[in-house]
Amino acid sequence: MTADQHRVLEARGLTVRRRGAEVLRGVDLELRRAEVTAILGPNGAGKSTLLAALAGLLPRAAGSLECHGRLASAGQTAALARRPVLANVELALAWWGVPRGERRGRALRALAALGAEGLAGRGATTLSGGEARRVHLARVLAVEPDVMLLDEPFAGLDPSVRSELLYAVADVLRDPHRATCLVVHDRAEAWALADRVVVLLDGRVAASGAPGEVLERPPTPEVARFLGFDGELTDADGLRLLRPGHVALDPAGPLTARVTRRVLVEDAVRLELELPGGRLSCHAPLPGPAVGEEVRLRVADGARFAGARPTRF
Amino acid sequence: MNFIWDGVKQAFELIFEGNGDVFHVVLVTLHVAIGATLLALLAGLPLGLACGLGRFRGRRVLLALLNAGLGLPPVVVGLIVALFLFRGAPLGGLEWIYTLNGVILAQAILALPIVGAFTATAVDAVPRALFDQARALGASRPQLATLALREARVGVIGATIAAFGSALSEVGAVVLVGGNIHGQTQTLASAVLTEVSAGEYGTAIAFGLLLLGLVALCGGMLTVFQYAGEERGRRGLLPGWRAS
Image 1: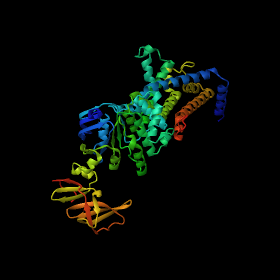
Image 2: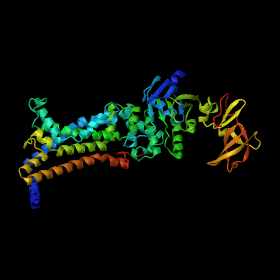
Image 3: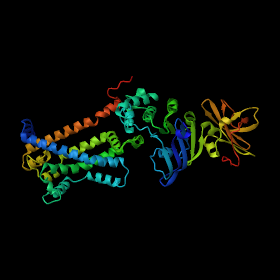
Image 4: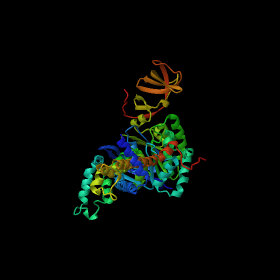
């Protein structure tokens, strides 16, 4: 199958206005079969608007949208009808146009794929948030669309339920016949689920590529900062942005910094450091140096941007 | 007090001796109430669904009209319907004046805003995300309407109970359009009026008790139906389902 045959949805110059303001500005996006694409971006970047526009639920102000197949989307809210879980999934299949005789089997298979077969007989109003999310996803999975759009499938869940569901859907999302696109808020979720990430900033595609590639080589300082490059060093070559993982305390390291703040994080301490030419942050094992203490550092390359200006001084 | 007690005794005698006239009035009342409620549902449900589900220009005006219609004076509606049904009037050709059809039409007009306004409110209270999700999965308009009615069924059946109760008990429009003709267009409510005017308090109380009983019986039955699915939903069971 060629790349063109894999392409199932293509948006070119997609522009969407809401209440007179441009929320999406000329977005180009391709979704391909067998690929999971994660849309990342801060609040208000236009992620949900992009998904709604791709689903055809919002009118386009400009641009084109081509879809070769049927598309199903799951909204941010796990809104279920007041009837049993199995009936909810069967109802989705009825909306999709699946013949009555096939509905029960497909509904049960979709629930089982998400580890929710035990919920089939339960009333939708009796489900917990995590259970309702599973059913919500099973409903879209059951219809077997060519394109599946999921808007923040893990929103509003506590961390333990979130990671459990993340684990449950990781394999389910990947299907050789389907293109999947999901909006996620958490970078770790994108890294765990996606083959390709698209970073949306201020309604525009600011970066697109394989997760490792985008994380290692963010194209702009804005993308890098959004991806957690919160340390900045300026030198003769320009601006260098670093993630906490790029910085390590090392008594033999070439740089000297002063600890300005300590924040406990699970089994480590996050240190904020000040040094000539910039500020960095890193994680250190407990108990870690005290505020005001001088430490020696070793730093990796991070992302370099010639000519860019630091923002934090 | 004896006067009232004697009336109540007379009422029970009339009811339990199987008086044919009394039961004919009961049948006419049910005929009018069921006919008017069905007509009101036929017109009111689409209006309520449109207001509750749709986002179109003029929706608020329509909602305001339906809500204002809840306060329609029955006598005025009866008068207007009668004026339209008199011979030579625009609807005179139907020959519905002083007939049960005329009475049903007038009662349906009174019940229509009840069904429409209450249905719109009940549908509006269903989370919009559910309808958005249904659209995203390809639900057609009739499927959306069915989903809305089912999700808002407590409110919609509540609207039906209110409309039916109004059609059972209303008297002004019945008298003006139907003429309150004994054995033909006289309902329980209008019969009470006639009997009181004639000084027949025992018969009036009998009709009154029957009307109250009918309202309680029909309201109770519809309420059982209204919450029939709710209890199963609370217990969360799919009928006949066994988890393997």
